[in-house]
Image (cartoon, rainbow, N blue to C red; front, top):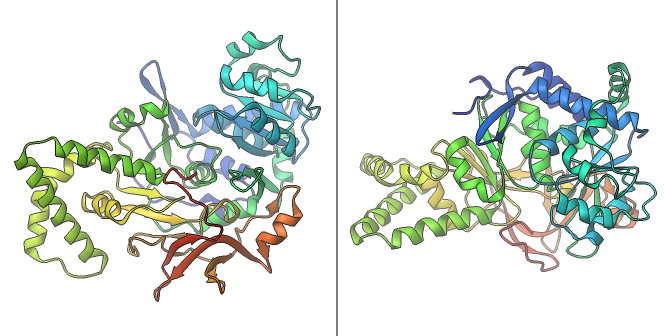
Length: 482
């Protein structure tokens, strides 16, 4: 089993930090020798401590400052969800810069738009395919001063293609004293911009949502809806360019000191679930839909007796879950039946996810009620949440002890929610975003008198639970979150 932190309640460092970089520094000190993340090398999982993580990020940060980047300059990161992404992101934060992610597999034109619109000074690039696209996209972009491959070997392969190519070794070995870097970090203020998150561009070119340090820290400081422990472990694989994976999956772990394992690739997620055996698992609804479909299709190929046992166990589990979530008593007969169903059926289903997951989190699109009930019945509770990039990820969530399946839960602390006359969901609170980069007109249309107009249509029941019923512009958000 992979190593983690101690079996103790978590401590939110966001409540005393001034910026994201400050929070990271505090975490490196508080959890110095505990593992921050695990990566797979030559078939074995290797741990990196919080102290080592901080040292690696600081080395890259010194290189960014030595290159001449000024506080607030933008830095892009293009690559899969792996340790270098996290290191480069935290390097930007320690250097007082603004980081933004670029989804893998974008076209050169799409990459060029993001680099040009953001006035990016540096872009980090994971692999040769992405680097080819970046080199094409970067032609004529005078504000871009460095293109940095994640690996030195990749730099050597391409070094003569563009004079702006830099080796990651040059960054890590930059002659800059710690005091200079410390001064950069201390100079950043909560209201300063921390990240740019580019929206999907469904209704036009992508917009750069400006999110401040205060936005992020206010969100994280209020996130006490789940009973987390310092020895909780996650397997991360969703794109870091997405606001949820970035701010909750990554920054949220820094806040409370949890350990993650980075999946080697998307195709490796299922086998590595069995190796990592996480206790937390966040994903888009499509993953749960596929798992639900695969489990049922495999059962259909089993003998009739096995199929009958599965249907009986499923019915027992769902009846028990419905009673428990409605705060109704569970008859002894049903409880005993559930113990049998769990031993014969549900325990094996949990094994598909490693056997230890106790909290699943999903959002970005609705999950079918039958899927939610099935996972809950199998002892794998899925908590649906709601939010958007412009609301710094999350405003509503189902939480332990307050779950209503088919809804996205109730507002988080300090969040106000109301419905406009046409049913549009309006949000107000301390982590509504700063605005759109270089687009005051779009900002003024989106935030009116302090209220964020989400574009979603919803219903609020008598207990404050929100249900998303439509999209104002009738756009379709797929189960993959697109």
